[in-house]
Image (cartoon, rainbow, N blue to C red; front, side):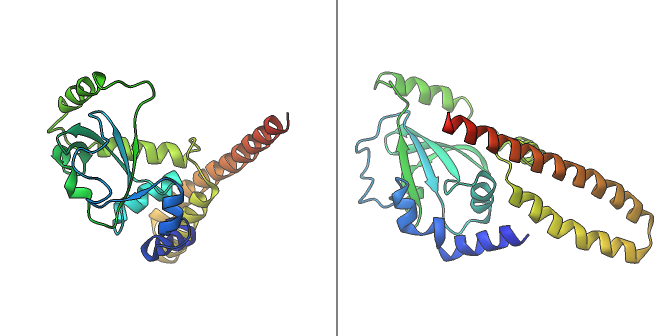
Length: 212
């Protein structure tokens, strides 16, 4: 958990890639009413990409996506958002995010017209009231750890830092769980080796393509 702990401390201290200047350099605008006047320069259907401060869940998203952005919402017009939150899909005031700490980037789909925005919003409103897709979050995490496109070697280091001490504790306990843990650990180490080799070969391929 060394890599995760260091990254979380940087996030809480707003240092490194989480420093306000770094986020502003990525296009982030401080979430204040002065920067986002009601309905100004926003079309229904615009996508808001957010960096949220002081949220462990938001940090988890940023850490496992190697990004400083943790959330998106859809601008619905009339200073309101359609938003998939942990409480479910909601429609609520844009002002809820204008806390002076978060940062927002506004993105408009390429080629979008003012007439298309309300259609997008109406389609999004059909999902209002649906629960948050925790099972999809878990599936993305599992796919990442098994070598998906978001995989980073630091994730393997974090898991090893947790699993090795656990294995030692089970060994000292002399229980049947120890042998089960050994089997799981060997499987995990096999996945680690696969991911290390896969990542190395992918980077070599990308480097050759860049040279070509």
